[in-house]
Length: 156
Image 1 (cartoon, helix red, strand yellow):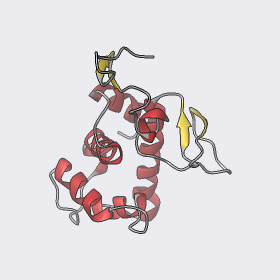
Image 2: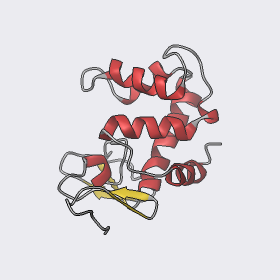
Image 3: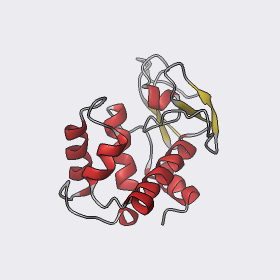
Image 4: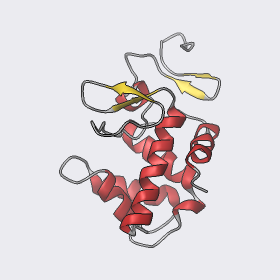
């Protein structure tokens, strides 16, 4: 586990900013930073289960983020997605999420218009970090975690 500061809140442990278990978001607790839903017909590399809300639980955040990379690459390769708006509308549909805010946040972090084509492979860590921050309300991981996830996914 990690060490906590005097208030039991965040402190840096290695390359991950830990939160106390009672304060951790679902994505951080599950090592599934972007909240991938579990699928009965498929198990991701590093998936060690699912929580009561049907979200995947991974053995490490790198493997959870690796799965995100693979899904985003699938959107690009098989669905022809080229804009933040396309990726996020598919990732976080409006019937379940504040998709417009999500799109605007991610586009802002990437420095692109939500509807402008961009090359996902030029800034994969920025995209992952922005999605993680929007999903969890903060970014608990160092850049090294994102770089490892991208390398594990072969998304470069």
